[in-house]
Image: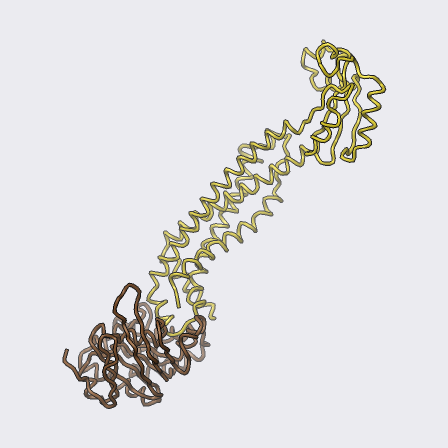
Length: 229
Length: 305
């Protein structure tokens, strides 16, 4: 599903590489936590998977494709098989819940019939049935994140990338979001989640990958958060 | 691609940047009106050139008996029949000559009388003071030098005169003016392009949330850029339409009414509506493509995949 081979990435005008010689493999259907303090390279790791950045040296394979060889115009096609969720939800404030989810399908040219059918389905799945016509501003943080997850999942992606999805939520709400991500993982979707939330990592007992100053320092199946911050 | 979706995006974008859109429309309209205007001015000069060059002739003036004392070319006195035949033979032989006719002193006197009937000078003239001449029309009016060198200085020839030289000064001036207009135009176009690039940038920035999400869910860059390009093209099209209107109104007031040049200067054959109408589609197409291109350039840097 995802394979990093000796990946090094340095941003322009920076001495220290953001990622240094990282090699790992994530199999189909896995649930992986990505931990590490701020500046450890988590975001760079995720951006490389999304091909928002390219590697300096080394290879990144996602969904069986070498991203270095993927031409620019094929990148959107690749991203349609990926779902992404962020800490700040990234919803459109002037569109309703249903419109926000539908937007993801509209902009990739899906027919209207498909959209009308799949949007309520996925909103039911994330537990927002009946809130289709609400505006994001009227929802709680947890509910907004559910909308974002619905939007990420509406295409039934093979891989879901989550960058601190519970970062803005209280512990109670976070648990709900984690249950939802777990359920999505059980449908066969690979989930890679960067997080700072110790409780969640310790409770879920999934594979943990730890980065420190750009290096891969731990790769542990059924791991715990493992360090104090 | 869903047309309705794209159209609504364009509408939102245009309304959001109403002042900038307005600025784009006005600057495109002005620069294109100027472009069309100077294009038409050039056509006007060209058509005047064609019209006048068609009429101009090379005149080969022959010696009059009065010239013998005053003109160094005519020291031998009046032109002889022999010399006249010689010149005529040569005119026939020159392939450059389209046609020629001989104007006798009598004819010249008559023409002069007609043209200057009001002048008191006309009354004091007599036919034997007038010059005989050959009026030559060339196939290519620019080849005057060939004729001049062939006849200048021949016995019996007083002077070879090119009427075209007189016109050339005028056309030189007109061409200079069109060139100046073109330079101004180039600046106007550059300003319009920069304004569009900036407008599109502002527009893209104000919608970075939407475009960011579009990128994430895998919308093609064509789909992401389309609304911005269409926005610019639409504003440009409105500007082009205004420019067309300005050209039509401009011709109406300059030539037919207002300044009414056509009645004041009836000698010049002014451009008709047909010529103006021919330029309009070009103005519209440029008005649409130029902003679209500027938008594309602006987005290349801004909305990378």
